[in-house]
Image (cartoon, helix red, strand yellow):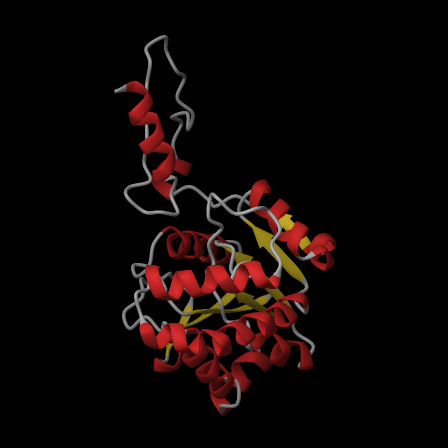
Length: 253
């Protein structure tokens, strides 16, 4: 029986689509005989039968510098070392990258599951106006813009150089992983363009549908009729294609 140690700062019902996907994936693994343990910062995670849970405040910080510093501390604790030694695989569906070299020193396999662009973008987001591949100068400018105008934090702006160095270091941690999972072919393309050394490690695995859709005879695809339909589900988020719906409305209005 393969034992999988999952370290996820957030766990369902906290978070969003990435956390729901992690919950569904671990549910599938548990149902297929894997021994699964979850370490999370979420106080009351939704429990999956036969899965062990540990909660820790060391995974609750949203700031990159603080979060990764606390993860370094977590990796030195006796209980976490025991957990890592008793498992075969470290699975990181969020950003527990400082734990990767610790796992590799113990000869454990590491799987990193990317639900965003954190390995190749300081912000974790690829803006629609960006080229596919960016250099450090461009990315630093974008990082300053993000901290000052998106996060609207003077402190984060002042700490950006240190945070950026931590981001660069995280690339080295990610490169040590045995397998990188991307959720789409476009994401995989962008990751490997920016980090060619990951090319042979990347696999594309789509997020699983919820059980109520998976365990049904109803088709998951809807055939389009002749009527014209405009469907937009991204909300007002600047990373969900809001600029596209804005252009579309201007054209049809």
